[in-house]
Length: 102
Image 1 (cartoon, rainbow, N blue to C red):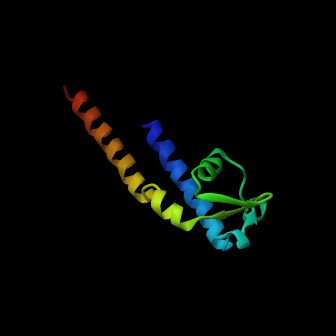
Image 2: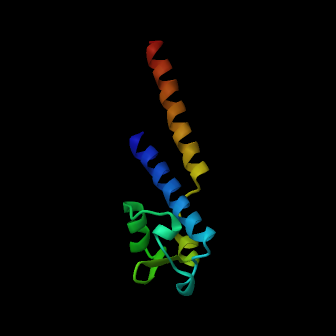
């Protein structure tokens, strides 16, 4: 259960990072922004996005979102991950009820 919750949290954080770049129109080299101007901190999730080229460096401390790479690599939407978590919780609850009735 913990790994699924961690996956959901990481997906939410990736979506928040992408939203920050989109809100400031930092979508190409010339429009790149500093992380602090985007309200972002240098986190492990952000570093993973840089490593996978979703976020690209355009100069000293300036980054932009590569929409094409994001579209080809992003994970399930958060609501789909939440449904998976809900399914696992319901399955565990049904199993607990079944085992208590024995």
